[in-house]
Length: 81
Image (tube, rainbow, N blue to C red; front, side):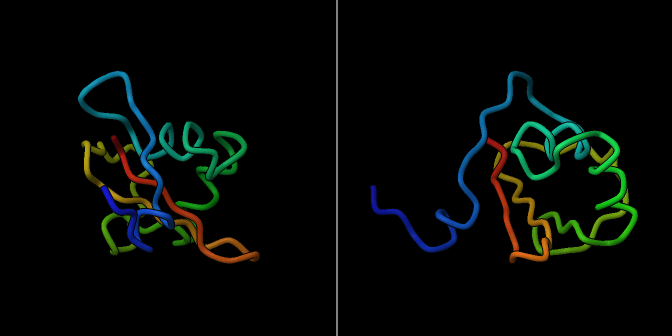
């Protein structure tokens, strides 16, 4: 299967259950170093889920959802897999 630019920007991150909360996924995917940083990123509007800013750290993500974080060094993201 050919990898697209979007796949490279949002590599898949496997989750153990059917859903995961946004704050937990940010840590699991390495997009936040801690729960405190995840909370800060979400509160500051730096997190997009499926292209839309989401301010709910407890939002439940499902397989196929994409998460993008605006970092000073450029956006980083991951796909729930």
